[in-house]
Image (cartoon, rainbow, N blue to C red; front, side, top):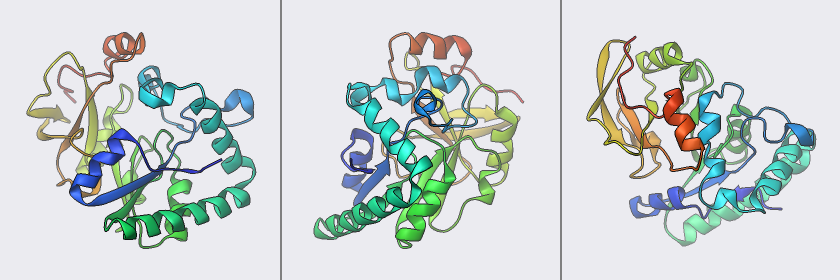
Length: 238
């Protein structure tokens, strides 16, 4: 079993900007619970119905068992997980050097576990890390080497306002059937949007922005995301 994911469509977009990206694909939300795991996205909400586990290669039959296996290894055999991760990170750093690309890491591709980012940072202190999160007060967990973008759901508008007021950009998923607006109102303030699908280098984003992401066209999940309001088509007036 491999811990790191290196070849992924969104991550590969960073190559044109001079970066090589790795990440860890664990089970999101409650996917691993029936197998002895845990909720890996403690503050997930309506995003669960349109989770990226339902999109692209994540839907392949082999991918869910692999995600669950990694998750259980992290939760129940942490030392073994860390040893394997250390070897793979070292190989990844060498690969980045050979390709003359700057190595970076997104610790949580589908999950929301800050301890995983802390583990990766301890193993490779020079590695620039970044994540999206719904955990409250993300500004308390950021550092020079760990950048966070807060993710808006239908239940956490107040937390999103707190985040952007503390210099943390907020990611908003928009209805794929509608154009992304040039700005988005949050907490009574109009913030400019930037294209979050262009690449995944969130640590390069200027502060005070809404990171606009197009919702994925997921059968069934897309309709639920639109109906719940998770895929936005209007302003948040708070």
